[in-house]
Length: 74
Image (cartoon, rainbow, N blue to C red; front, side, top):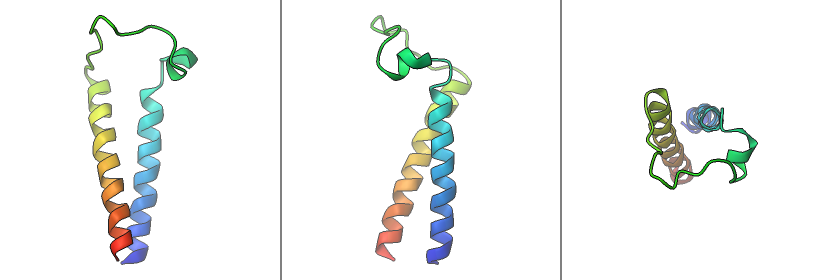
């Protein structure tokens, strides 16, 4: 059981890294460091693939956290 949980954690961690890196694509170095355009006007809605990627990142992070807690309990 411990080996299976470790494999699941490795897969989830890779998926989480990829999802986070894909979200920053196109924002440039200014967006990564806090500069660039700001969305003060409220025009920061996510559409299409960006919305899917944002929600998928949250789900993967929750699953990774749950698997980490499960590995502690076992």
